[in-house]
Length: 566
Image (cartoon, rainbow, N blue to C red; front, side):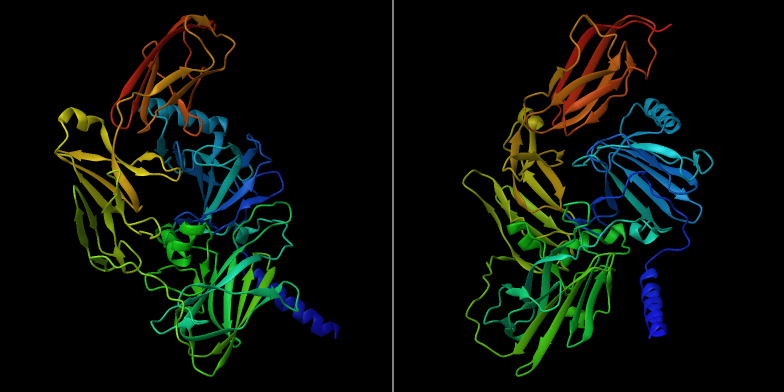
């Protein structure tokens, strides 16, 4: 008995250890316990999460370490996105990524600032030579922060393979305490063929769940169906030391004991990430903010995360037959929740039918289309959308154009054009194409102007219209006043804002010399570090020009005094 038990444990451990990368000698990027606010492959807006988000105790400034020997291969500084990010290429072919940083380590910060001053730009992308910035395993390379599109202090950490594909960092020995089984909020049934029905409906049907006999198991109420159907789940995972609802690692489906579908988040490519909108029920997400993960593969889906997929995960239900479908949802630690769905094949008249609005414009996925209404036209390249659908282009009472609606996902950019010939040349300078944002307010959509035509290229359907911005940006000093001494200040802080089209650019000088202003768009704050330039005079002339997206600009000038350094 002991020998059989040992053999079982050995094979179980071997099977689980196959998920570990053994040829990479890496350490943790932080010296604090690894607690995650985001997991690899987690479902985000229009993309999968390409790394893990490590909590930093709601603080900035923790030392960030190179996980292995290598060299800094890329430094990218931007206002949004990753904010301040470092890339380290290692001798074993992997690249580690550290993002949303507060600042870089001193030697790297000096290298960065020299290049920023040379190019007179805060936003910058650098590719140092392999021998230029060599780092050792365990060397401090940066400090954690909250820069870019970060929603709070944390370290976004990635490991990419030699082909620049992001891989699950947990495969490299990152340890996270996790004894919780994934949570399944809901299970849904979809009809996938013309004649299919579930409980006399061809709409999406939410199944009734009750706790099963086994721990962490659920059983759905029996459904009666016919034709080709598929299932979907809404689920999340939670680790031991955090309340965050993170993404799950693996989903599997078995029909009468035979696996017919699975996906696992070990690796994907950035080029396929937007296909997340074929994995989830995008329309439902836009309608009720619930991401349902489909356990079947649609025609336009090109994701590489799938394995053991039979008939694209679709289940053919035949009259008079019974089926038992088991869904298994796992986290990286192999904690599992199962859902059993009993199905009886029974043809029924469809009494609950999904509604489809028919218009004169049928969009077929593999064809390009040009559609016009009033002074607006829309050009749609082929394979822009994932499915065929009837397209609506209409004008509302306020003169805004509804470019269909935001419940349909686009994979590629389409072009919206406005005829502005009725406006004067003076007015055109202040006009731009706007969309309605989530708060139902105008948001600038990148606008190209050529003669009497304005165009914007976008992946977002919704409401678009022409908006006018004639108000220049606002500039307000935060920690200094005109003609005052500020010798005790380490930083110069200025708040900038724009009421409509948004801040496009800024340029600051002191005594005629360009200064590096770090921009935090979340706070609308520009910050200058007085250590950057040694000035020999006490009187300083500050000049700041801020320009919005239609060209309105504000020039702010001020004089301040500061003790000179010996």
